[in-house]
Structures are given as structure tokens and as C-alpha cells.
Image (cartoon, rainbow, N blue to C red; front, side, top):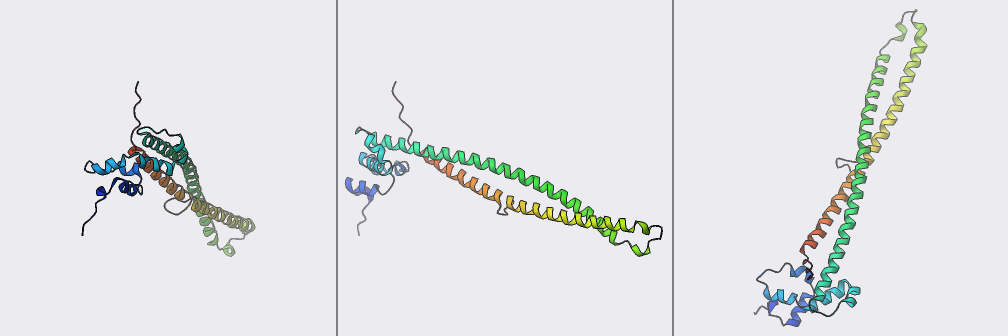
Length: 218
């Protein structure tokens, strides 16, 4: 069985096959050994049809001169990719600013949590010591202060409850902020930032593969 190579196709059939690919993307990947395909990719018809497909408005403004379709397509692609790139740069900047704010908020909450935990430990230690006192065995001379001591214990209990509630609020706020892979706001921002950065780098790679603009003659 005879195998038909792509380069053996008649010019018209070859161009029809190449239309299934992006000429601008295929042409830059053809090595020196693909002379026939490189030549086919230089045909004005391929560039004109791709320009019509991607940028129909620009087609009507392009003049029928040698290389005009290719130059116009490359220019339109460069403008489009630069627009995408600038948009992603702005998005990255906004995400970094928001990430910084959330990070500062998280650090504040961590410090507040540590303070609350320390105060809570102190109060619970005082409560524990108060429970160990046998009020019935107090000397008669000291029983006059019994009511005041009981009031002090009640105040400690109320303070314990308030601090515990505040600590729960801080813990919930920390979960919302996230960090460390907990799935909170900080992790989502970092994920979005990494995605935007990767997409921008992909556009920059495409820009680097585009032919450089022709230098104008003085």
C-alpha cells in the first residue's frame, strides 16, 4: 500500500490541509528539513484565510501587496496577545495587593489568638486555684470576705466565657482567611495568582514565537 505524504499533495490540496492548522503557529515549528511545508506556509492564501477567520474587520483594510496578509495577521496577533498580557498583568497586580491585605489580616488574627489564649489560660488557672479552696474550713475571721471571694470567682467565670467566645470568633476568621492549604481566601487568591501568571507566561511565549516586525527603511 502506497503512503501519501503531505508534501506530495498538489498545492491546492496542501493548502486546504494546512488550513486546519494555524499557519502562524505551524510555520514557526517547521525545521529546515520541511522545505516544502515551509514554502506552502508562505502562500498568501493561507495567511489571508486565517486573517479572515481571526480578524475579519482587518481583512477589508489590508492591501493586496506581497506579504501584506502575513504582516497584517502577525500585527493583529501581536496586538491581541499584548492586550491579553496587559490585562493579566493588571489582574496579577490586583491579586497580589489583595493577597497582601489578607496576609496582614491573618497575621493580626494569629497574634490576637495568641493573646486570647494566654489570657484564657491565666483565668482558668485562677479558677482552678479558687476551686481548691475549702471555704467551709476558713477561719471565722476570714469568712467575712467569703462573699467578695465568691463574687471574684463569678467574675472570672464570666471573663472565661467572654474570652472563649472571642477566641472562637478569631478562629473562624482565621479559617476564612485561610493559609497553609486550608482552602480559605488566601489559598484561593494564591491559586488564582498562579493561574494568571501561568496564562500570562503562555501569552508571552506566543509573542516570542511571532516574527519580528520588519524594520522600516530610512
